[in-house]
Image 1 (cartoon, rainbow, N blue to C red):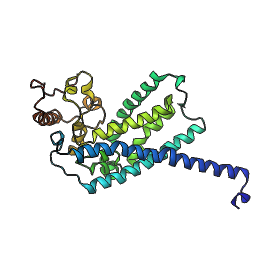
Image 2: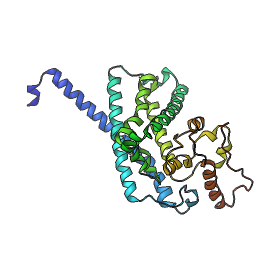
Image 3: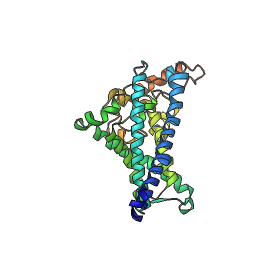
Image 4: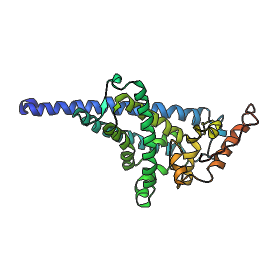
Length: 289
């Protein structure tokens, strides 16, 4: 028997590896893959299959160029990305077991308001991190070896959201690890942040505009990127680098000049297919203030 050939420390180590494997598979990988499909599939089926005709006016790129070959490629790349995210989570788990992280498990320690605030803070930080990392990945020596995998999808779909080169996946997974070490963060807040991030990512790659036109003139909501914003990044490439919010693109002058007109054209099509829409609805006004 193998047990007879190993000392107590060896057996403890094997037991630790076994528990680590269970955590990686049953507590991280399988749930993460399940969440990925629970988010992407409904969006895909509703907009790309079941109600495709009804939502045609909302389609950002009017001519569909994506197909099953692209979707299956995106799904394969996405599953690989989820598995890499799993390895990052396992690394954080190991660090937590050794008391090296700032993760806490008692909600009462900081209260629910802080828990919710931490999720918002992580989303804002990730958007900032993504903007600058994204611009770096558009540097030619890096782009053709890493980020180009994501840009192979021009007519994006919900499955594009996690379709990354492995190197880019590691970069995308860094914020979650950083939060675990530098921010007092509840375990459920980390999970919540990852789910919200996925949903926002899918909306950004939906291929259909679902953000209300009224948001574009609201003093606060106008900073939320409509689906058209990131869709233009895939069709025009060098601009509109942010994903969740417009702040950095506006501040750094990297938002496409054609963006307001492109977004307005999408809303015009939507309004033409909605007779009940208010005739006096204001046109899109996207400014810096």
